[in-house]
Image: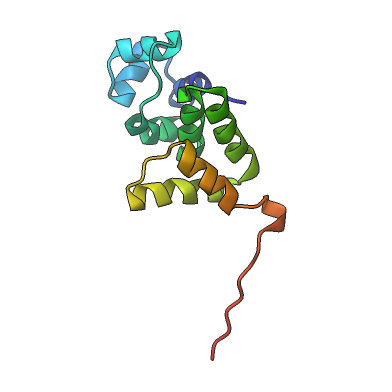
Length: 133
């Protein structure tokens, strides 16, 4: 599984940047913020995800979910997020993230479990057909 640090490296590579200082300027954070991410003293902040995703060329939802896994405080919580990442495709991850944004609910282990239970593995999703009457 990728880590948020690998996304920092991908962002540097894609932007043609060789230093963390230059990356910090592109992302609009202090150089010490990048140092703290790399040292594990802090985690990628949710508000940084869109900029990092754009620079890295990665889906925002993927980076946000990886960052949430890294922020997890217990093995159980981490396991919930990892299972969500494994079981649902990128479009479903985007839906879960969008649903949280639209409803204003923060993603936490309880909402993550509910989201996980709401989605079945992609190969067995139920479809709804509509007919014009």
